[in-house]
Image: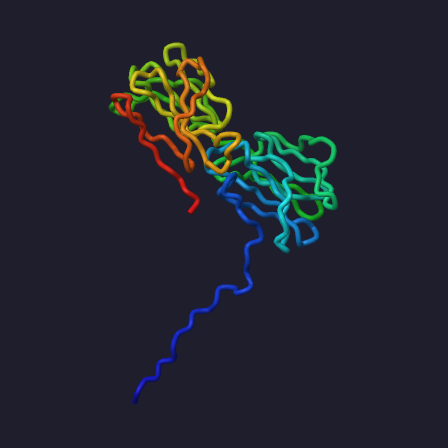
Amino acid sequence: MPVVRAPFHPPNPNPCSRAAAKVDVSRHDSHRWPAFLPDGKHFLYLAASHRNLSDPADAIYLGSLEGTEATLVMPSVTAAVFSQGRILFLRGNQLMAQEFDTASRKLLGTAIKIADDVQNDPTTWHGTFDSSKNGTLVHGIGGGAESQVTWFDRSGQPLGNVGKPEVNLFNLRLSSGGDRLIAEMLGDAWVYDLARNVKTRLTFNGVVSPVWSPHGDWVAFSGPPPPRDLSAGGTIQRRHADGSGEVETLLTSHNPIPNDWSPDGRFLLYTEQRPA
């Protein structure tokens, strides 16, 4: 008996769906953590950039299901929620609340602290907190994850610590002389003097992936775009490792991240992150 096979037509994945907010690629490359206001039509969301974990352009916006132009609410590097006429957000590891007028779409008064030591994951721009419609608050504790830099010998036995435990410590690199350590911490570059066991902040505007020059006299890093050209995406910059002098821009491109500096000092190897 012949078998009749009907043609397969895959289901249309929600033909009514459409974008509720458009990413401004000159400033951000990610929208995340939407949270509705009580009217069910407007929502808060975080617009963030992978250039670094604390980009000055990261902010909370008010969007609409009607797709109208989004409204900037406040700079922020974590998500926010609305409850009982207030916006809840993190400032460091402190949970803050500030009045928000939904009609004028503006913050009112000053922010007040609700809780300390609230858990926060800067790699996803998300704090562990939420609020019910009646104002009941729930949050995690523990702040950010701490890391301890530790020396080990080649057999795996610990020899001692460098500095104290720090929150959000990434991309550790030893200088060629082995006397200094550079690290990315809380979105900036810090240099550890290993002999004195002290650290010094090298940058102040949000950087990613610092790398040493061959002789340890310079540090290169990924920085924000030029102030007058936000569409550039990002820069590679350098500064004297002792903190002297001004920051110099070496390259402006699409979110460039330095990977290594050639032994002869002539070349920088880097990666580009393009939104597309």
